[in-house]
Length: 489
Image 1: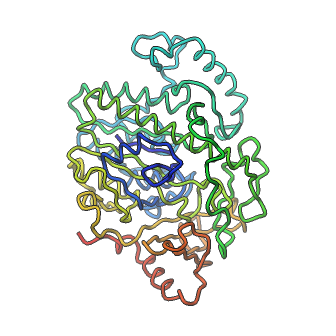
Image 2 (image 1 turned 135 degrees about the horizontal axis):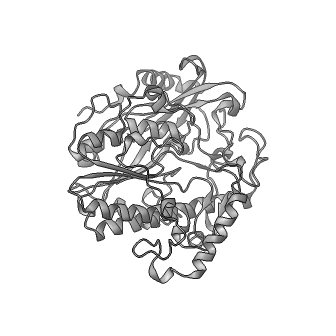
Image 3 (image 1 turned 90 degrees about the vertical axis):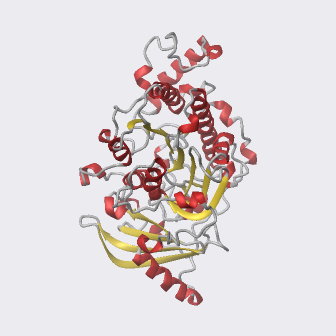
């Protein structure tokens, strides 16, 4: 079970978030391994997913922003599910594993399964295929469903990311897409359980990506007044102009069309800030309940004890952090993600590790856990030895990057920012970038953050004279790249 949760930062109880209500993901972590220092290779959907699904880093996939399609760039690319299929696995996908409009049908043995295939006129009446618990199949739910569907053309007339930024309809979980596809995933698992062929199922949840649409009961878990606002509400001091995202994703939604750039005088008022944060947390709790539902079904049909389950976020998300909303920066609020794994006969159940890992490590790790060949060209490192010994010395650094395009850059220029995270420091170099050739030009700026004493990255200290030697060392380490950060096994 390969479970993606879109835009999920470590907003989970098991990661120390005292506000988040996530008992099911926390329980999964309690039965597996929690990686507390996992980094995405790019803080935006398509490049991050292309990297982890191929086991290659962004400069190898050449997928640097949302519009890049790895299958057009390198048609012969072998993805993780393709590799599992070659090794005898039946592969099937529901939801967002690759990016929305590039699902990559070549990777799967079955066409993408979608709940809409089951939303027929009599979908409430079919024996064994209803989405609801019997007690909840009633006319009021049907009325609520029809009301939502009638609103949809008005709310989203101009595309998927228009209309209200949140919604809290008092409906059953399955009246929102993630709930519907979870029920479909359960039926698919029941079908697969009757086969002797091992399976690889990708299940990609869309929440907590905008819009924050979740059933009202998950909003009711929280009191907006009790949810803290961002601990670092300002753009880092001494930050270059081009480091921040323009928040163009949020500005497409109702009431946010006029928001400014984070590095301008823009400031979100507290009421709207709390509403957005409330919606994010509600969406996380909604997905958490669906994960719990899925795990319960795996146990019910006898698959839980012999199934590998890995749950991960593709990148983080700013909730007012750095005076911004969304992802698309090189800052750690966007780079750090949750990653939890549970598998049969796993050692050290319930353990956590604070050693550095990366999303690109998943491909070789899952191969090794499944006992199949690890492709020789992998640019990540299997973390299986770390599961066996969570306190052992591991990677010395994680590597990420971000392509800042002219139309969303504060100064109208194009840059590539390369990032290296060690346990003590986070260092970033920004270069001019030639998009046609994919080559970097001049070094334009540097950023350095003290991860121990300034975990929220409030002050860029790259210009501090007393840290010049640290900057030189990190610059050399960044230039040497990921191969020199691999642990000695």
